Image (cartoon, rainbow, N blue to C red; front, side, top):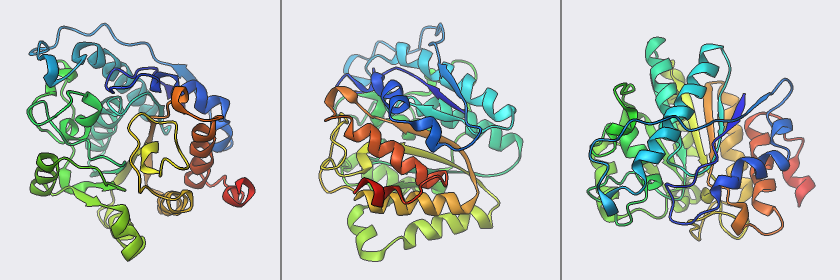
Length: 302
C-alpha cells in the first residue's frame, strides 16, 4: 500500500518533493505487484510548536518537518493495522522518522524485534550537536535510535526506540567522523561498497539470518543515492563509488527471499536533477526485485 509525502525540507537541495509523482509516472504501482494500491499523498499535520525549535543551523525547518513526520507515521500505522505493507514515497530521508516510528510501535505491540536495513550512501546518524549542515535528513536514523536532539518531533507520543544493534547501513561511503564514531559506539553495522565488493553479500546475508533467527520484522529504507550517480543522477546528495544497479538488485532480491519485510521507504529521488527520468525508472526497476516482479528487468533495460 503506497502513499506519498511531497516534502524536501530536510535536505539542502530542493526537488525531492517531486519524487512521489516521478515514481508513480515510472510505473511504481505495477512494480509492487498484483493488488497493490496507492493512497495518494499525505497532508502534513498541524504540528504543535517543537520545543527547542529555534535552533537555527542545528536543525533546519524542524517544526514543519515534524508535521510531515506525524502525517507519515499516522498513515503507515493505519496501513499496518489493516495488515498491509506501507510503502512511503518520498521526499527526503527525514520522512522515515514517521514510517519507522510506526513500524517500531507495531513490532513492539507484536512483541517482535524490529530490524532496519538503511540503504544509503550516508549514515544519517548525525545529531543537531554534530551536524555540519543542520539538514534533518542527515539525522533521521540517529533520532529513531534514541539519540538526543530531535525527539520533540514526536510530540507527546514518542515511538519505541529502534535498537541500533539491529540496524545495518548498507552502501555507506560518506560518513562524518563524529557520525561514524557514534554509529560504532552504538553498534550500528555500517557496510561500505568496498566491503561488499570484497566480501560479496556475506554481511547482508548474516544480517538477514539474524532477523530470521530472532523472528524479527524488517523495515527497509531505500535512498536512491546508495546507487552510483552514474546510473542515478537524480538525487540531491550524490556520492561517487556507489552500488551498480545489479548489486542493488541482488541485495533487494535477498531481502525479498527472506519474507520478513513489513514496511518500506523509497526516498531522495529528485526529478529536478534527473536526466530523462533515468533515476525514477531505475528506482522502479529495482523495486521489482524486492517485490518479485522483476521479469529479468535489468537485462531488458540494458
